[in-house]
Image 1 (cartoon, chains in turn cyan, yellow):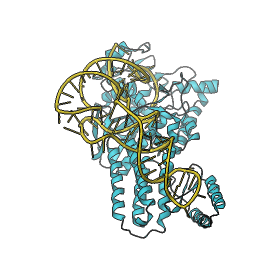
Image 2 (cartoon, rainbow, N blue to C red):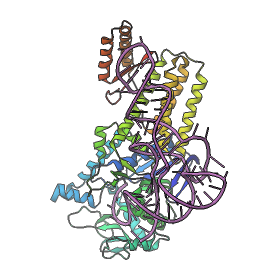
Image 3 (spheres, rainbow, N blue to C red):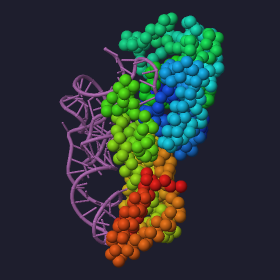
Image 4 (cartoon, chains in turn red, cyan):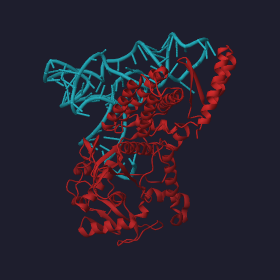
Length: 484
RNA sequence: GCCCCGGUAGCUCAGCCCGGUUAGAGCGGCGGGCUGCAGACCCGUAGGUCCCGGGUUCAAAUCCCGGCCGGGGCUCCA
């Protein structure tokens, strides 16, 4: 099934038409995180981008089955657990991934990232992984060394092709730590043998745990079937992680690619430098959520094309808060005109045509390799149009054209994952309207002190009044007032 | 050493793949408007050697070549 979307595929390094293998259903896998610490803005960017992709597909009528994994056992988790629980490591280590998974999901909820179809965990799929490894060993694509199992990259035709790496270059520049027993420094562990004091799972090669690259192949094919439509993650996963996933699946399934489209999101830097533990410049998403509107954070991420790096910057999030405020204001103004507007009006044709044009531009932007900055710009243009041509000329609008504009606003909002807070309690609306009428009569009698007091006091509550276009409009500042 | 990406208004970014009106948007600035004030609203406005140099072309921000600067990957990383 052809979709209007054209998207860059890392596997071919070109922009391609996005086709689904099965009409009406898109199956995608996004590499999740290792829950050993707070999620940071980089994780959030990836999640928000794929959430947008998912929402746009849904807008186009596609049922999206999105799977995101948690690597809930690995060296770093053990390290943190050992630090926290010492000798109780074996009995309590799982509290570490459990804690950070819960927090991650809370952050995602706050960012309006829709829940995935499944969140498979390594620890819940070990038996499947063991079966895979067993099969790979039997076929001679992997070998056992002291209870560990390594994947033999020489068994894969064109290893390195996926990520554009040349094997000899990899060897030359190799900061590869040669593990004893590996036949080739580029071979990687499918199964890591147990060390005393660590959690373990049983296997034909002794106690141990699965290796990272294998996990994602096993879980994605288990939950989605192969081949599936798209596989994604951060740019930094291209090599070695995705190269190795492709290699494993290639020998296991004999498929050139076990996912058709490979989508990678640019990294988030801070002051021109990569976020890293050693530089101590990691920005946890929780900190950002404490200070800024989640919708503004979404828009901030989406205001840079997904393949470009973002240099993280707080003041740009504030700029997005201003943008959002303006869009909510347009929305609220429309609602205020609704009651008194006639059913139909002379300006209907023009307004509806314009609304349609904004929607088409919006779709075209997203179709062009998910050009979210251009799409956001259309949303802003729509908001400006509403203010200048509708709100300022209220005599031209009707219930019909207002509802069309609200629909378009709503569609765009749903795709971008913003405007989640549009609902305004009707009782609140009546109360505000009454207060405004009182204030208006005060103004007519030039009792400006009293009129200004009302405006100021409402403003403190987050209800912002503005006198323009010959009437008083108001909107609700969603950051300051929680709506039902 | 090898590979990749970016360099467009004060700031954040579109446009480049498919070369062609006076290079766009938001934020910020400035000036007006709006039954007084305010304004988060409206109107207007300033602000750009499109990193540099060659080349291709009737025509280059856009394509090609070579530089410069910044960043990333090649080890765990989203």
